[in-house]
Length: 498
Image (cartoon, rainbow, N blue to C red):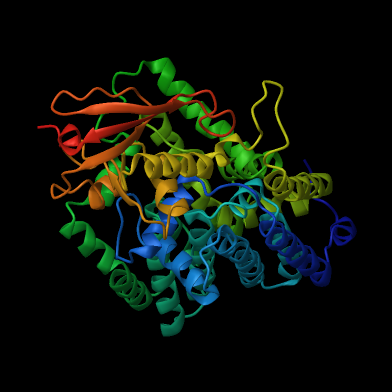
């Protein structure tokens, strides 16, 4: 595909005013629609909220930043409604879009930067991943902002030494680490860029300052892990199956896992943006790009490659590569801007449709169904209904102590029944805790009376008394068609397994 002429490029220009109008307009749409969002908190969202009620420097499955952010918004608002738990997400995406524009202008400090900066902002704000994570609070929304700030500082340091920007680089990477450990996947690409591109090197003094600043920021979480049997690290190892949990799978399953992760990236950032990143890889192989394009490549594509390898040999979730899409968005926009007008505009249209539709789906979460009768938003509804049913059973059975082992059930019990006269506990199954709830809120030995035990499996007590009070099958939501059981049991029935 040939380069566009200068006149063709000018016709692709998006004015700064229009770009900002799109970015702020989409953000306003998301915030307003959050006020009408009818979905329950997803299991992870409820867990993050609960962490925020128990502030710490680390938690079972994630570093602490997401909990701190939610607690901040709950505190300034005086509310822990779903709106105030989630509203940080579209605001973080707004900040990231604006920061991407600044980063683009800094990297392309000429007319090109002025022309493509608005495109970088509007393409990011309409990425499918941004649209989804703007209606459900997640660690990705926080992490990508601080990765973008770090890239902005890094680019500045490649041009001149600066104590302030070295501190910004280190602190931003530290905060990204405190949000999600996947930021570490960026480091190999950064190293390669600094080794192979003279224009990507920064002064050793700045490297040392950034490293010290970053180490100071992450040190409380590292100490927390040391003091808590490396809980977060061990959990990450478990879900990634670095401990060999997936060794029994055959080659075909590994191959399908890798292809599945790779294919999912077309949905995460949209088919055209991800195609543009693959195109950038082809251009690098053919040595067609300049230093700026090459730098953006090393700050993005290797992350996708590394996690694809992880998916091939063990396990990976589609959103694990999100750290690639700060630099990746700029890279894709730059290529599309120069080489195909239709691709850039089509990507924006696709993203804008998703950005409009997803909030609408959350408002009509109980109304829109797929052909088999399931709600489109099935995973995000029906949670509070189960918790309220459990509370009603506990009240009638006069059992204020409620125990469960299912993390989904526990997460919503703690949120939906907050402030009510129930004591909620996780069942201690023995060995290394299976969840944050089992780690910190397992049934204490001091509780000896009758309990209400709720599970999605039949229960038989071999060491005490158990009585089935009720079984029921939710007719909508995430446990539609599954039978739930509520038992009155003696505490001895739920003693940890030896």
